[in-house]
Length: 173
Image: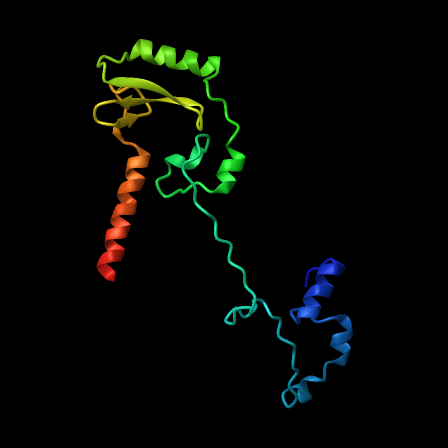
């Protein structure tokens, strides 16, 4: 058998996975070992969670209106909480020069041909998006860019999901 570090050998022996040198001497001979059984303590690997504690507190977060600086507001399943208000309240409301330069190059290459599209700054993500003022559709890239994905806004999608959930819960009742 390979030589194990003493600390590891001691832990394995404590768990009953390895016999100590002292245990080898205490072991009965092979002729009597069949009649005698050695009982080892079982190691508890996981606790039993069937019974819930009497005083278990559930923290209920109050949802608030969308926080301007929250970068998660584009996740339609995210509801801003007081944490979002504390963490993302201090954001720059105007873009930095680097972002303006990048989007100026982008607009030079793919100009907004229709007057219905506007470039809007998003302080939560510190970037621009493009908004169609007539249809309320949005895109992260200019609408005539080949990779542009024009869709409805996350706020509208979130509202549609909530309406569907409310309808489904009303049907079940």
